[in-house]
Amino acid sequence: MFFGSKQSTFNYFDITSSILTFCIATLGLIFIFSATYSPAVPFSIFFKKQCFGYVTGILIYIVCTYTDYRTCMRWGYFGYVAVIGLLFFTLFKGSVGMGAQRWIDLAIIKVQPSELAKLFFPAFTSYLMYHHQNDEKKISSFIPILFILALSFILIRKQPDLGTALVILFSGLLLCWLAHISTNFFRYGGLIVILAAPLCWHILKPYQKQRIIVFFGYGDEKKERYQIEQAIIAIGSGGLWGKGLLQGTQNKFHFLPEGRTDFIFAVLCEEWGFFGACLLILLYFLLFWRLFFIVKKVTHEPLQLFALGTIMHIILSTLINIGMVLGLLPIVGIPLPLMSYGISNLWITCASLGLFQNSTMQRIYRAE
Image (cartoon, helix red, strand yellow):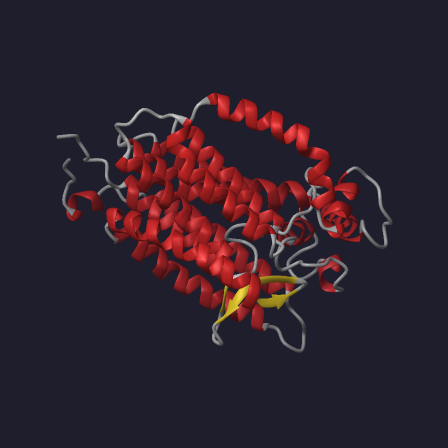
């Protein structure tokens, strides 16, 4: 196979998606500032950390864009094996926060291995597909991928972090579907899931059961339903144009839990109203539309699979987060990509989008 030189592939760098990416990230900085603002400390430690994450995220984006994509796929494949080891380590020696054991404390910063799983799994899958691209796509050829995917889901759910576990599971299954796994797998798998639903209910944590019950409209407004009720109040009180930056009462008086993280969309809705919500959704829509438009031009199947895998978790996380804040989906602990506070998540999102740029710049590919 043949690939053009770095100089020629540079011409295929997509500036539009880059601008959209960092427009959304800039909005994230604005609303993290608002969600953590106080007269005594205008620039909170969370805002300062996110600014650091923003600047370093740009550097990560650039590095991932211009590192040889074959090197990224190869190291990503072996990196995912290391991630599995880190997930095991986290269960026994991980740092505990907010009732979950999800982080590895490196003194300077805490690393969340489940975020690394989002980044490396597409490389793991596409690397295997690259070496078996001429083989017949039977279910047996997907067994290593499905085994690692199932193991990842179990380890991340045990932390517990069901939201991230589901994002990785759905992303992985979508990748398998795009890689032409037999439709019988989904038919029989769906049947097994339906039959096992009662068992799945019993293995859920109590708080996870409460979230599902709340989704169906039950629960005390001052207890189980408090978080979603406050989010809906914030969204509704924003009206058409919002109350203005730093003027949201749900946010300002701390009625809205997790305003800087999972529920930052509600903060935006309260302060910028329906207009702000539509603006953000439009930016996401334009970004994702642009990414799909670009990836269609990649003709090399494993490379296209890799590119799609790098953005799959971002798209799913965006849809799930906005859906749960609006009450259309059960509440799960999933941040809004590029918007929510969290350096690990921001870095992984920037790295994923950088790798996407990297892989879609290889349009001069042709088979020997």
